[in-house]
Length: 108
Image (tube, rainbow, N blue to C red):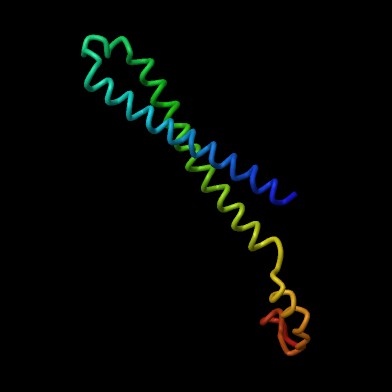
């Protein structure tokens, strides 16, 4: 079951990464097409369309970067903070030392 979930997670991440790269390449392609193939007289007519195109493609790329980073942080913190390792659990069980004071300001 875990292997199936890991495979599905991997496929989703790969699809998201592919989507972000396609968005980056499309912005590069459109920029080069505008610079070299579109006459200056037609750029004024394409202004609002190009604004929306570049805004949406930038949102896709930035959204991928942000959520991929967030996903990595959640996975990292989830692995390290939710469950104590066996060494940590053994140390807690083995430490029966009463000389450790929980509150340094507390006087006996």
